[in-house]
Length: 338
Image (tube, one colour):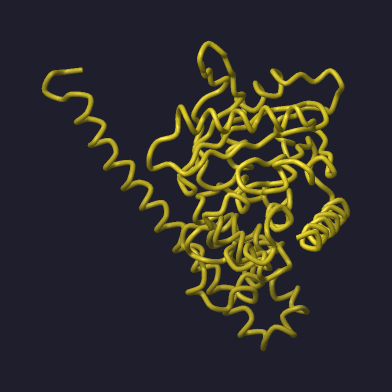
C-alpha cells in the first residue's frame, strides 16, 4: 500500500465507516419495528380492543391489499396479523430491545410463555444472536435445557438479571445438542471425526456452549516432566475468567475418563492458568452418562469437573419433559443424601 496511507490508518478509517453503516442499519431497523408496533396498536384501537380483533379478517385483508399497492412487499395478511399480535404481546414499547429486528420479534411471538419469551429477547440482544441463531435456540429448548442443567433456584433468579451469573454450574449444559453437525449416531463414530466436525462448525458450537466462550486450541499439547498430554478442545470464558477444557468421548462415560479429566484440570491449573484466572473447568462430552458413577466420583462435587451427554438431534418436547423430571429427581436425591 502507498506509504502515505499505511495499513493501520486505513483499517481505522474503514472501522469508522463500518460502525456508521451498522448504526444506520440499526436505526432504520428500530424505526421499522416501532412502525409495525404502532400499526398493530392502531388496528386494535380501530377494532375496539383485543376481543374484536380476533374477528377482523376482512379488515386485515383490505388493509393488506391497500398497503401493498402503496408500499410494496412486506404487508401480507399474515405479517399484518403479526403486527397486531406484536402490540398485544408487547403493549409497553419501551420494554422492547432496539437491537432486535422484525424477523426476530416474529420468532419471539411464537413463544407462548411470557418469562421464556423475555429470556430469549434479552439473551438475543446481549449475545447478538442472528435470526437463525435465535430460531435454533428456541427450537432446541435452550431455556429449558439451561434450567435443567443447573441449580434451579439460583438460575431462575439469575437468568433475568442484567449481570450474568458467574457460577460454573450455570454455564454447563446437559445435554449439548449438536444437530448442526449433520452426523448420524453410529458405532463407527470416532472422537477425531467428532472433534473435526466441531472445529468445522466452531461458531455454531460456541452458540451451543453459551455466552462468554472463545476458542483457544485443539489437541493442546502439555509436556509435564516428559509425559505428554493432549487435550481435545480448550476454550476460555471471559465471564467466568477461566479456561474450559473439553474431552470428547464417543462411548459411555467411565471412571478412567473422569480421572483423566481430573488430571487435565490439575495440570492446566499448574502450567497454564494465570494469576488472575479462576480455577480451570473440565467438561467430559460423552455419548452416554452413568448417573451412579457420577454420584460416587468427583463429578458429584459439581465444582470444576462435569460430564454432559451430547446428541445429534433436537429434543422433542416429550423428551425434554422426561429429562427435566429425571434431573429434578436426581437433585432431590442429592439433597436427601446431604
